Length: 194
Image 1 (tube, rainbow, N blue to C red):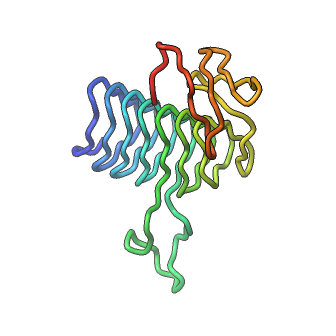
Image 2: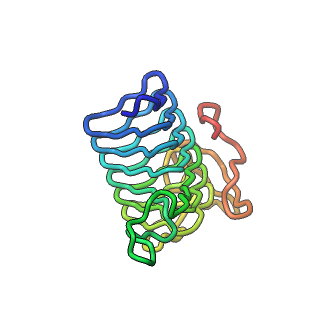
């Protein structure tokens, strides 16, 4: 771990994980074995980065984000090892672009988020998906490239259609499609607001 990385209280970093310079993780996070958190990455509270997850700078993760085993959040629009004249590229030869993952969202095992994309609040990216465009709040996306295949609630359960509304089978919360995502209409008192 870099000496200037900032870990919130209760945050645990497992063996062989790297937390680089200037990275900031909130309270009660778990960074799994062999995970990588790039320089300056911002991670909210109560996040889980599973084994071998790779979170490259300048990624930003909200509170309660889950990044599954071997998932990758990229940072280079045009990756090359060398410049057009054949010289090895340096940090000055490219501009990092980041992935933003909003509060409560989940990135499945071996999924790849190709920067720059935003994964919305409480969204879920299926295992093995390749995200190449923004993901709406509460969207369930899967495939290569990832496409919306449904909606999920804060518990992660797939929402059930009730006329023009969507209900979470676990919490009972009702949702309405709004813009390109879902809006929570009524949440049971125990549900945490995003």
